[in-house]
Length: 202
Image (cartoon, rainbow, N blue to C red; front, side, top):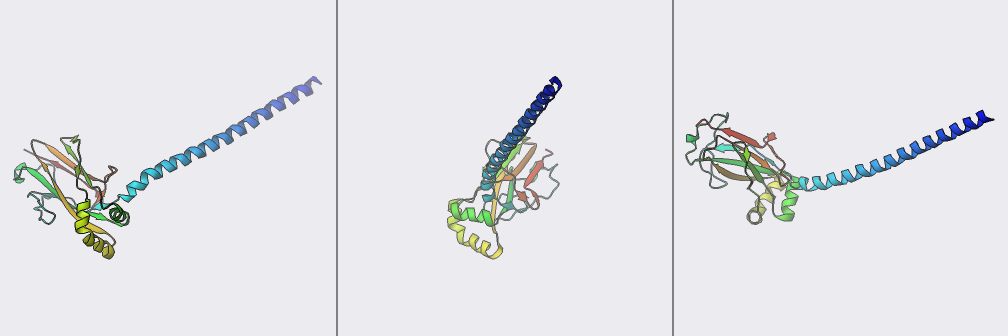
């Protein structure tokens, strides 16, 4: 009789443990599903604005001459850029020129807001400058060129916007630039990340 009671008690305890484990597993799965769902929602909230700002660039040209307008020609400096003679930059600055290419979502955003952020991050001797250079397509630009950009998009499925900027040389041994969207993500330029690094021999 005692043996039967012990066996029944052990079986009862085993059943309790199995039931508790099953309950814990179910609870864990529900909590995990909720966590995954919340993470997915957070990710989508981050990606949605990034997609709407999406654009690419063409080749980033390094110019020896001063660029003062979107239509100025570039006296291009060809790579390698790691041992440049700063005397070729007569204005004591490096000028850059490139084209922004915007497809569906970038154009939709430009139509809605009449504005598209384009930012340039700058490093001088390996130290990033606090302020990025803003090359945004502004509301004023959209007012002036909306018809032209809309025509390009209707014909080619994208618009092209030429822009430019410069960086003063001062005594920098290296200068690096990176073209980013509004979220600080580096855009694609000419099939690779839109980055340029320059090094100077003197």
